[in-house]
Each structure stands twice: as C-alpha cells, then as structure tokens.
Image (tube, rainbow, N blue to C red; front, side, top):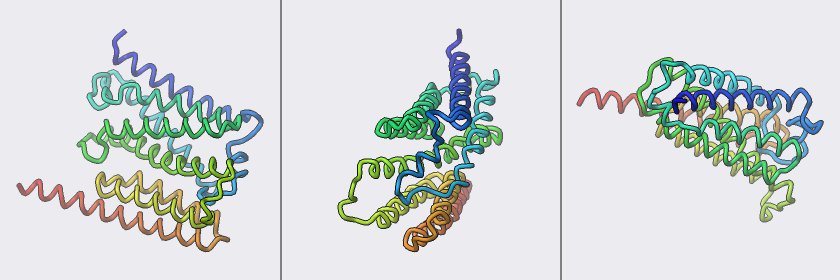
Length: 258
C-alpha cells in the first residue's frame, strides 16, 4: 500500500477511535463517572464553567473536516499534510488514553497522556507552519483552523490538568494561596496567547483562550481576585489579537513594497 494512503487511512481510524471513545465516555459513562463529575472533585480555580466545555463539539467538527479533507485523493501528496506524518494518529491515541486514565482515576498517567497530546499538537502546528505559510481558503478552514482550535483548548486543559493533579496530591502551593496560583496560571495563559498572536497572528488560538478565561471568570465570580484576573486576561488577549493582526498586515505591506 502507498505510504500516503496508509497515512490517510490511519488518520481516519484514529479520528474514528477518538469520536467513539469520547461518545462512550459520556453515554456509558466510563467507570460510571462523567468527565465533569471527576473534574468537580478538585478544589482548583483554573477550571471554567460547564458551558465552556461545549467547545469540544466545535473541535470535533473541525477534526472531522480535517479527516475528510486529508483523505481526499487530491491531498494524498500535499506537502504540508505529508509533514504531519503520523503525529495526528499519536494525538488521537493520547486523547483516547487520557479519557481512560481520567475516568479510571489514574490521574498521574492522565497528565502524562495530556502532555503527549499537547506535544503532538505543537509538532503538528509547527510542521504546518500555521500563521506563516500561505495556504488556500480550503486548507485554512479544514487544516489550520481545526488545529488552532484544538491546540488552544489543550493548552488550557494541560494547565488545568496540572493544577488538578497538584490538588490531588494535596500540594500546599509553597504557602501561596490557591487564588494567587490561579492568577499566575491566568497570566501564563495570557502570555502564551500573546506570543501566538505576535508571532503567528493566530486569531483562532487566542479566541479559544478568551473563551476559556471568561468561563473561569463566570464560574468563580464569588472569588473577586480570580474573577477580576480572568477578565483582565481576556481583555489583554483581545488587545494582543488586534496587535498581532496589525503587525502581520504591516509586515505584509512592507514585503509588498520591496
């Protein structure tokens, strides 16, 4: 079998596996526990309101679009998709493994799987050169947007997973209050988003961060410090989006003038 065809088929199988296991995790649910029920056990502030998790529907819709697009005969030798290689399959396997680890309360292993998922998505993002490589409209919507969405959310999820694991082990935060640590994590998320805006002008990635931090502000409205920090982070990220777009347009204008 042609290597490109094998890659396309394995990507589709990996995506199908993710969709099936995620569906079962909610319908059964796995270990008779929903993902949200487990998350609510941890007394951490870097967790958004429940409605925020509806973004998974958008992420999976985007990934289905990518799965179909990359499987087209016309995309078999697409150099950008060839560069992705089997990293998408790795991300699918990590996603599936995370669900089992989380639902069966293997929290340390869940963080390992989350980190593998994050690293695989970063690898895909860099290999696709999102935000820098010029691509067609179809490739923007079926390749770039899905992975910007996915990476943005997994960035937030990884930070949340770390804070949950530390709470699981009863870490005292070196004497620093949980609210202050939440502010630090929000600042970290804002900084990462700013870097993505200024270096890649990736609006989709940053909008995911805004969606998540606003959800944190809503959920923890009774904690003024956390809520205010989350709102400030959202505004900061929005300003960085505008700055990133302006910087990108200026660079394009300067290149055109040369």
